[in-house]
Image (cartoon, rainbow, N blue to C red; front, side, top):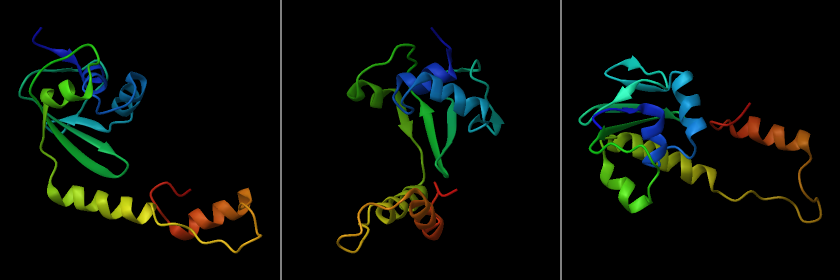
Length: 130
């Protein structure tokens, strides 16, 4: 085996949670190799650099081993080298720390309504805001 479908590889090394999600990322043009967007059926081989745009962050991986079947996390980590820059990880960390701040709500007001929740998300202006 010297080539594997890119959607299978992304799923098998646990970069994306499901194969259908990997296929969706490819179809949306979020997966590229050497500045060329990849289709789900495109193949990767050892030594290829795969760039994945996920939640506004650009992740870069170098293929070390090829897999077609999903394996456990300790084995999956050995199949790629993470080439993502420290700057991207800092951007992710600041976003993640921003997201986990606790919200304060006055006692007795209960949960926010759907309208209030949308206003809160709009005000915060995060990545997942509408």
